[in-house]
Length: 358
Picture 1: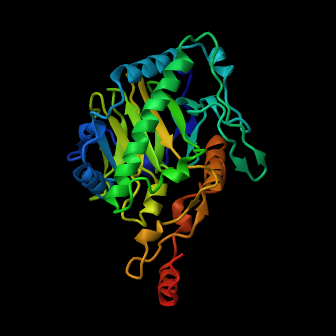
Picture 2 (picture 1 turned 60 degrees about the vertical axis):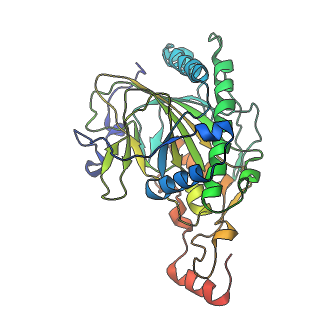
Picture 3 (picture 1 turned 90 degrees about the horizontal axis):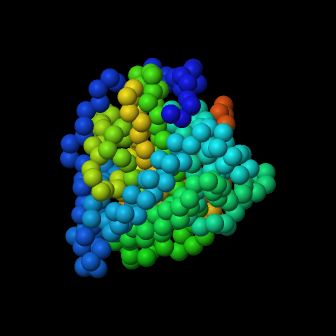
């Protein structure tokens, strides 16, 4: 069952350990996307997505257009992979230079996560992302002796990417922008897909499947099975609440990039994954990320004297590779966050006075 054994590396600091009982969240927006799939006028849908992005930072979508059998084939492939013996999984293990494939030592905020993962990209091979000390090689590692695995996940990628672009359009419309306003950033995208397996954990009161974090990219489209374990920090009171699994749905997380593009109209949601003693859990996040050359800054249409730009521009490729690196090995420094690019009140005041909205 994943071959993990409990040790100190998994133990969360006391203030971040999960409570014995996490309440189920009430009022999480569940949005029916069938008008979008049918090609109807989507102003009302865009407004609904906008409210959910503002109030929660995430929402659940149903009737989303991704065929049920496509999801079922991907989940079957995922389960078959993690059921393989450890030595077989190790043949497609990722390395620092080649960050795709199997891994069982992921860290979030410098604490080891109780999970094993398999990372892949939708296109093989995609454009490489340049990092300061050389080239990261984003090439998929496909396991041998697992017939249909590659085909099932490539098919899933195509369907979910289509959905991600539709959601991106709804978010743009909800901000009063033209529907394709953000599309250009996704040529040569750095999107990746993660297969997560959370084995039963002997100490679910001490460890987390994934520690608290916000997603760094634009959008995350998450499939989760019926076991449950995704917790979100509720805006109204800061409490952790459990997101109840909804059959045939995806959970959509607004990422940090959309928070910046929206100039803080929308906020990415802090979330984590709790584990349990009895049941293994599976999930598949699709991290929808722009090209590595993208300069991330508030959309100019959303910046004015009344609403000055709240962020300094940053390069997504540099940000992404730094985050990847700190997850790979436990670093002594804090992970890079968008908060590091937030402008001070004084800087915003000065820019407003000089008419500089950059």
